Amino acid sequence: MSDCLFCAIVAGDIPANIVLQTDTVLAFHDVQPQAPTHILVIPKQHFADLAAVAAADPTLAADLMLAAAEVAHTVQLDQAGYRLVVNTGVDGGQSVYHCHVHVLGGRGLQWPPG
Ligand code: AMP
Image 1: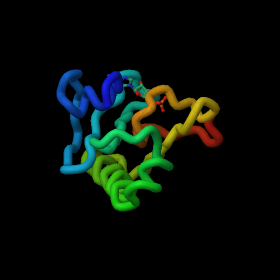
Image 2: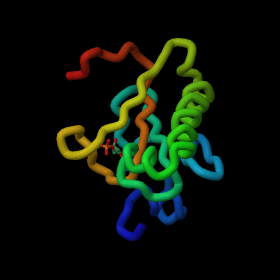
Image 3: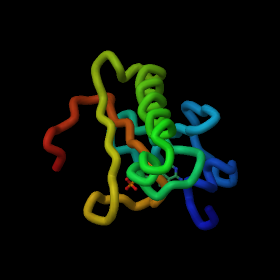
């Protein structure tokens, strides 16, 4: 999709620190980390949010969750634990309207979040 930041990362037009790439998903470090480790997992195909992915392609939604778990293992978050966050819409704090799963960890995370 034109004018989509994450589509530009998928296309290689904007650089990213990539952690994992499969046929369907891409994972890369967030530029403004909110935890010692903060990685985004996105579908390569453009969808505005996770609900749109799940409705159009449930297998792709599962791919995102599997990739998030694989990323957590790769960066060694899986033993201590980590948090997955999917901000959706304005009240959800979504700022980039290309579906993404935040993988956060590396310290004890407050719950409920502030
Ligand atoms: P959200 O607020 O849930 O839509 O999250 C969007 C995330 O994208 C934020 O955590 C940003 O820091 C992150 N972000 C924005 N631009 C980039 C970029 N060029 N590379 C990596 N992460 C980015």
